[in-house]
Image (cartoon, rainbow, N blue to C red; front, side, top):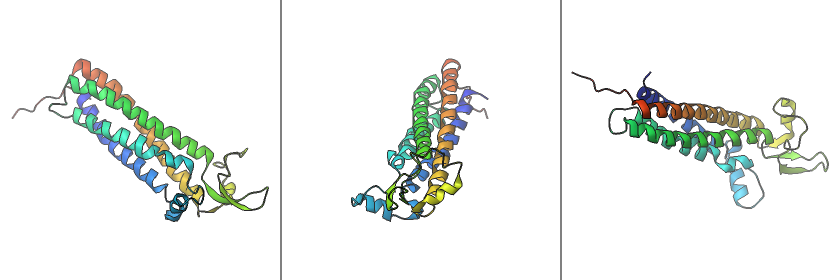
Amino acid sequence: MCTGKCAKCIGVMLYPLALISIVCNIILFFPDWKTKYAEEEREGLGPRLTEEVKYMAGVIGGGIMVLIPAIHIHLTGKQGCCANRCGMFLSIGFAAVGVVGGLYCFSVSIVGLINGPMCNYKNPDTLSLQWGTPFINSTESYLTDREMWDICLEPKDVVQFNVGLFSTMLIAGGLEIILCTIQVVNGLFGCLCGTCNKKQSY
């Protein structure tokens, strides 16, 4: 596959990944599919949302920082002003930005999975209900022990909610890193050898 076609394919594959990252991050602001938790936190009633959600890694990192490079990389693979050595050279820089964005999304997602969600749970020491992250200081990983998930009483099924969405962002971020890294190498070859895009003759 020539460097131009490779760039076009990479750009097309990055679009849905960036969209998935943005959507997952936005949904994470509404645990149990309700807006009341974000509203309660905004009203100063204490933390209600998982801290890692507020880092906007899916919107900024896996989303915007990948979507903009994806557009340029896609255009680089087409015939025209971008499909030349200069365009391929610029795509290296854009792809590097995409790697950073994907890495940010990937890293925050890992931290979000390790620390677990913010939820209302019964403190084993005081036996009173409180908001916090009950799994953050746990000696065992809650990810491998589903029985621990019942410790979170509110929002409903927040553990499954967070694990599912952060895992999706983790996978999307990982794929973005791989694709953008490939484009860095592809852009280098395209810069040296050209895109091999030729106009069709009729």
